[in-house]
Image (cartoon, rainbow over all chains, first blue to last red; front, side, top):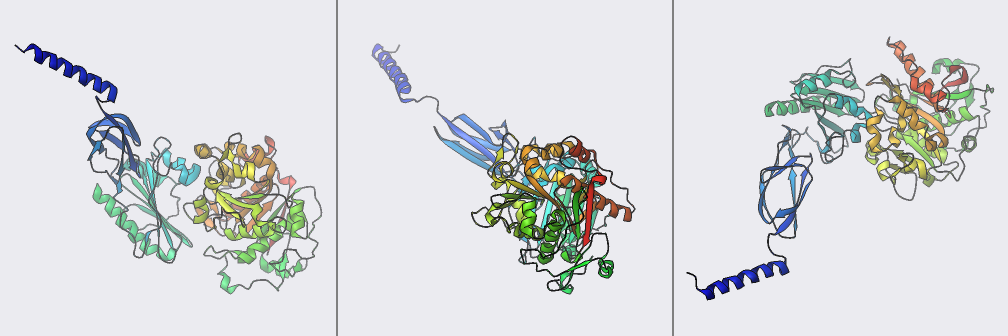
Length: 249
Length: 337
């Protein structure tokens, strides 16, 4: 038997606890969480539950530790690591997931380095950091979309003399799509030059430009320089990109 | 194709030739009907030469070629560019002074003139050459102040990539993309550069053959760069839409001149050639027709099928009254400098 005085004390304690919670706003505590990804739009999981494409905003998340994970996007982009973050009451916690490019990071022709940050263009249905393909190739982007384009990764390299090399990697979704795009004369005109780079390649020399397309796996890759004296360097660079893509399969 | 500028003497102080038929320079030099001009490229006033052709009642299209204007490395000579612009203006207006030519085109000192260039050539260099556009801007300054000239394209970055000096400041010739152009007009769904800022428009595309439905990517297609981003999916494979865009009031009513940069063009999709000329007219549809004939001449030489006059060009005349593509109404004035 519990003594009556102790029952009374427990009752008083319970009432005080409830009143305290009511008047101080205690009880279950919540915070907010905002998750972004960069440069591609990735899918976010919180505590194992899919939360959709970034950016994701959760406004009534219980305080405490949560696990943030990012789904795989493609072979070209390495997913951000899973991390645990603490959500505090009444505060907004921001998490940014960086998808690292595996094909274009740190591999450049001699004397060249990125002139700008990597740009990534998506589709009207799935925008990326720099918008859609139409933000890059105007209406002509439809030709690529017709072949299943998922996203376009664009990098500009320059040397000290101001010479520019442009690299575009079109993720076509499947190897079949990439091959079909490569064979489409609206993208790769006839009258091309073959280049031995370890992948099917079509090159074009239009003084002073030299440009080339090749395809491997689900990717159609385009390289261009406005200084055709760099043709050999461009071919070597193309070969190294083709090798990297192949090795990731 | 010329071998390069280093070997070519600039004409200043030397004779410059003008002709009205399609002749080579050599033929032209032999011609007794040519007029010899002594011009200074820097001079604003054109020489006292009566350039007026007999009035025919037809739309005049100037077809000006100058092999010295572009090298085989796609380097444009600014002095030659300046002369080409001057000759073209003189031809289509008959005015012997540039200021008079601009006045004849309806440009007065109060006007703000927007020049729509084409910098969307992401595969290889096929943009409106900055030297030609600078020459045009210099010529305009015989009538208006530099601050009343706006060179524009869809994005500032596209202009910069093609060698233009971006300028969003208060001084000098402005040069910026729609992303720095103050937004879009909600009624016409065009950049405010076109609807609000300018009072006159000069359309300055390049000589591009894209085959397919469009045939050419010329004057009518160039205003894709005046559109809102959300319209980009509507442009490709939809030539009728591009014609409709050119019929929107601000573009239709403000456009006073069309010039096609054919220094380096394409005669089939993705294949450039140095045509070394410009096509100029106050009637863009007539100029579009002439540009297509130039492309077809090259295609015949290369034993390729000719591009038929696309339906959207005819529509520009019949439905929207933007000009004429009827050869019987077009007076092509060819000259080789």
